[in-house]
Length: 170
Image 1 (spheres, one colour):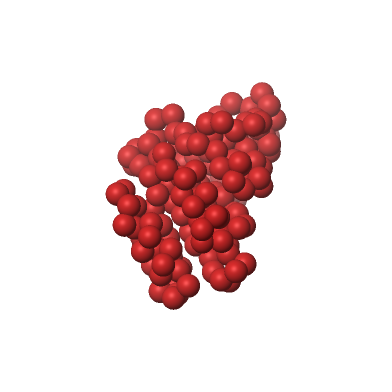
Image 2 (image 1 turned 90 degrees about the horizontal axis):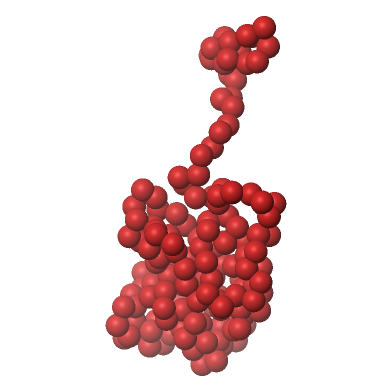
């Protein structure tokens, strides 16, 4: 593990509900969802992780507990170090508190997560769709979202796919 991250990881994993993993030099801290705001504030104020580089989510459907992980990538200019945070969420009405008061650019990331995954951020200043039209139903990046796609036509299946095209029924 990066020696710059060791004090951070030691301080946070000493708390109940926190754990860490390392894979190929990247450190990930698993944070209980209800403690994400306090954790981000601590990381910004005491450990100088002053930039939210990215915020995204992962859907583990059909698994429901936890179904989602909200992933935060933080960067410290002072120590030139990256730190990943993961907040596991239940699959039924997933929500967690917003961190836009700590990292203002989280506003856009959280709107995207609401739009694409349906993860609600409590206390967000303007939680509305950002990519899809306002009247759109559902959240397209959820694994249980209906695809409704057309099968791709290749040389091995072109006759079968072609027979399903609208002009084939005329």
